[in-house]
Length: 413
Ligand SMILES: Cc1cc2nc3c(=O)[nH]c(=O)nc-3n(C[C@H](O)[C@H](O)[C@H](O)COP(=O)(O)OP(=O)(O)OC[C@H]3O[C@@H](n4cnc5c(N)ncnc54)[C@H](O)[C@@H]3O)c2cc1C
Image 1 (tube, protein in one colour):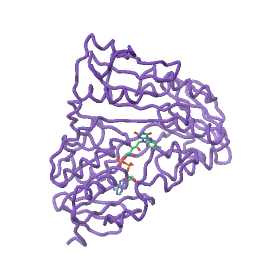
Image 2 (cartoon, protein in one colour):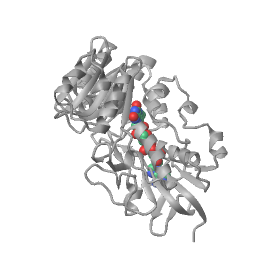
Image 3 (cartoon, protein in one colour):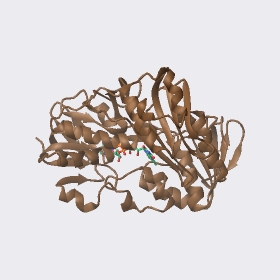
Image 4 (cartoon, helix red, strand yellow):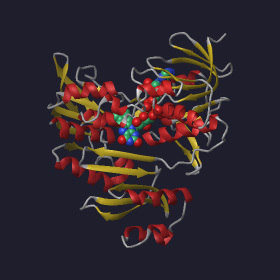
């Protein structure tokens, strides 16, 4: 017998759940909403954890999705420091970590992702950090400000943290990564080289085509990072940004169908899972994208935000496919900002529009004449055209060359 019944149970205290709660109310849902999250903070934006918050320019409250009073005003029961331990989709009941059993009519599973941990010799030493939550950012700031820091990983976490620590805290940073060029895995070598040069101009050392071998320490604290190619870098602190894995612990236990290839929970185009009345959103949702004509799973802030809204609309019966083109942004302090729409699974050609030297350009990733993704540094308006071309799956053929010509009107493509 359930201890209480709610209309909407939102599992996970991140952005996807928070925006779902908001849109349930905005679309007229009157029933009880219970949002359960295991972190101590109310739902907040994670991007500042490697940017403004890490730099000390934004407060904890600045990162919050809404001020504390909003939850009560909206009659949303927000439970922090609480986990959903079990989800019984046949009985439509969830068991919380405080043993309470909650019956629901509809549920959202938005349990997000966990950092990928590297188990090498010395990984238990003090001073080695991962970054996912506000508390991690606090610990990094306390440990790394003004110190010698090694970042493991050349993707956006490693690059952003290096930029933030160098610019705001005077740390001296070195990046060790497998790829030859920073950020090139997602955005190719042209964009990657541009962004890496911004880091290097500001004194960040970059060691590409290398890998973490082990950590060395003294008195229980890390002192050096040793790489497979034999570098031995001094380190007062280390931050590892080696990717994330979707947290499907609860979903697996509940018997939801999972995507073994991409990770995450299998959803249809409306973000419905295999269980009736249960949706998924955000980092864990592997969904049939009507925009791409294929299944995708994306770990972007904007995607979690928009999928939360789509789920809310579907919980109130709209039957709406999730049709927003995924958008990503990243800032390297105030040295460079990139925006991106896609995601491109592959591409065979990159066309640059604008000037790399002047730091104002867009890169168009083409897969056999079709646009697969586009990146902008200082040319956000180009991405509006890119979104349109991605959604229409237009084959640009010969016309792709016009993308490079600044006098060509993108609206005509
Ligand atoms: C440092 C950092 C910087 C980032 N910067 C950018 C950026 O610049 N641009 C961008 O597009 N994206 C960025 N991202 C990614 C973006 O923040 C994520 O894609 C987004 O937060 C995903 O939201 P979510 O709601 O799916 O999951 P999450 O934010 O991970 O939230 C899920 C929550 O659910 C909780 N939870 C898990 N299991 C349970 C359970 N059983 N019961 C209760 N609670 C549970 C988790 O503890 C977590 O609090 C960044 C991420 C990080 C970590």
